[in-house]
Structure formats: structure tokens, C-alpha cells
Image (cartoon, rainbow, N blue to C red; front, side, top):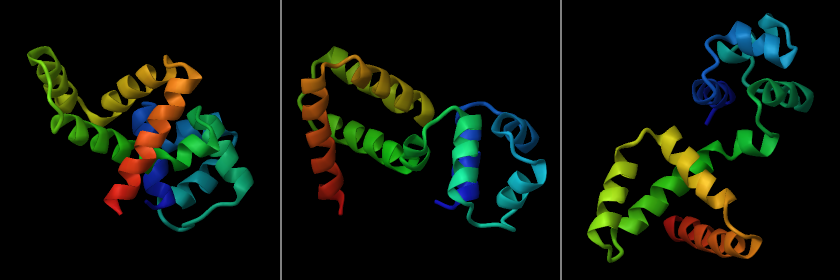
Length: 135
């Protein structure tokens, strides 16, 4: 994903209405951010990326993990569909599948954050195995 697409995706997720708004939040000039968003500058230095992330309210890691989160949520849902389920679980999975991706991410991440460190470690192993099986 190109830098401008990643920024736009995060702006959509965070409901930031304009490049000017993000520039103000990021303490960047509007022209710096506009040059990135129009494709005039296809990259940015680390300090600019940090400022953009601050303006978006995300860490640099979260900023770059966006693709992986979408892929992980989709892979997890796809894997869950192939597993035996009760009627309640089938209904819940159908509802999750019908949600927009950003809502799916929010719900899955909220559940993940509620787990113990040991449970998170187990989920991390499962996710890595899902990611490696797609390659």
C-alpha cells in the first residue's frame, strides 16, 4: 500500500475529514501533507511519519500494520467459517462478516486486548500460522 493510501485509510478509520485537519493535528504544513497525498512525494522521512502518526492518534507500528490487520481479520473469519459451530456462533459469524472491515477490526482487537498475556501469546502463534499458510 502506498503511503498516501495508508494515510487516507487511517483518515477514514479515524474520521478525519480533510488533509488540512490532519496537517493541523500533525503539526505539519498543509503543503507537506498535500504533496504526499497528491503523490508528488511518494515517501516521507521518519520524523514526518511520526508526526502524521501523532496526528492520526496511532503508533508507527499500528500505522504500518494496517494491511496485516485487515488480512488477519479476514483470515480469522474465513478460518472460523470452516470450523464446527453452534447456531449462535453461526449467527455471530454472519453478523461479523456483514460489518465494515474497520468495525470488524475494532471488535476483534477489543476482544484481543481483554485476553491475558498467555492467551494473547497463543493467539499470536495462531495468527502467524495463518499468515504463513497464505504465502
